[in-house]
Length: 457
Image (tube, rainbow, N blue to C red; front, top):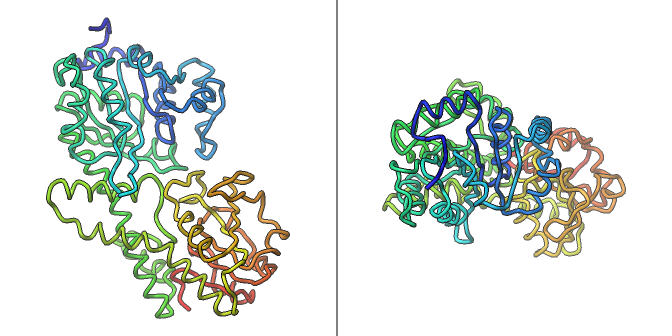
């Protein structure tokens, strides 16, 4: 079926191809994680091609325009590998796959409106690979998926044309991505990675490939589903613990206890891992990862009540931000109707240009439904329209003077440096802090009408 010189099931062939840097790599999906992954392989000297359906992204990459300005350290790598012609991009999956030995899948796994994981991108690519994958190729899935997806679905999809049979003339494994947006270079060079193959030999082959590219510990797992189970367990652990602290913070507010003070003291204990409350948990990972495990529970007739409860808590936190705002409005006898409210930060996490599942969206929708005129300032989205609102260019005195209230939704570094007394310039000096970055004492001394999530009365 092919004239590939490299047999990806043969240790000697793979090792020689790495030594001579003749291994050809295709990364399908060059977004937030896929592009840094492709750049890492290209930087190691391996000829790498990225595939994406986003024509503008592909055009920008091939024009030398780096698209991830909020990922420190990668622009220099990008410029080097483009200059050295080690990395190119295309929208044509067939051309890329038929000229590659190693196929990496870094595709999104979002969820639908019913909170069911959406694997359509992976399924679509799997079906395409069935017709175009060459003999003895190795497919590695880096996307975050449920345990069993490789064994139960992906292999069948790639095999459906009848041309390919797993462990005979194509091979598959996983190495779940393990990086935090905004810190990907740090994580790619420091955090251990999990490797799992369709059999022990493929696991070891994946390990020697990733050893060549990444200088981190590679943990061999017994199979693909165990590796994916570890990935989900670590992320859902965070989702649950954020929910735990957020729920406590609601009670601490009523007790007049500052949650930040509790956490600062609690983290001194050796076995306490601190998590912070907030306006909600967004992004392409934690919320979806919890629903992936909940989907697996439904599929297997299991019960994951703690995860389900944690999701409900995190999803109600935007409503609590509205409650805090309403309480502050009542204190000064104001109505939401025709009020001017400034949202500070719409990214789902600090210092990243990403609004996937951001809690800011629900807060904005609710404020609008209450009759408020909503304004946005976010340094990563200035001078564009988001959620049908023109994002302001700067946090100017002129802007503040028109506002009745400001709500901090995202703890961007810029917001940690703001002068609290500046908010006294607002028509009504109402400041709501959902991220614990404003000192309540300073806010009180500045004569602000202040509400801090979990910060007591």
